[in-house]
Image (cartoon, rainbow, N blue to C red):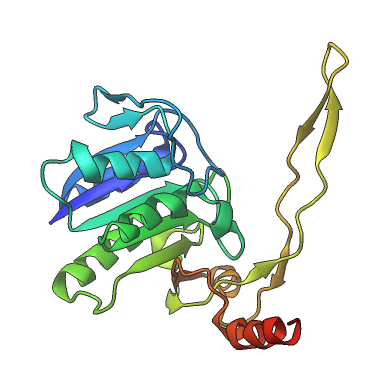
Length: 249
């Protein structure tokens, strides 16, 4: 089995190293990741300049672009053979609920999905986690299961793992994405030159985080596995919008 690995924390990130170490035991892996942290890059694709690809001493390729750039370049020109799966992570911090809109980790997996390859994004439940190995083992088990029995429909999975030892994981739950309250206000600071600068505020706390959501599963010690999609159409509003337009004529 051939797997393309990427992330949004950069090619030197410990989560990526842990994932590569564990997956290399069960698959032929290629790593193409950003040269630096690109958290929050979402699905941005670099179109205003050429991109360079370099190879580190450990064999990882790194790109001076976004997570989406990395996967796009890997699948449309760099790799000689298409992989069986794209896996992005392990992210330093959660990507649950509304986080998925901004996440570069999820974006890298999404690019694989858009190019027709089963893809998984995997994240830890908190920043600076102590148990990247737990998430790596979770993904190895998912890959083995997928290799044994593929999912029938096109697959894009968002996986979040509690930051606890693997032996303490209670199981796996299929979940829906929850929702957060609105983000905290920006933090306004003055530079030594007297210029005003802003740090984006922290993400809001869970608003819709009850049973069945990714927030709830992780809080209870379960691995959250959410099937996600790219279709942004609000299908339930199409008929109402058609009627509204007719009423305005």
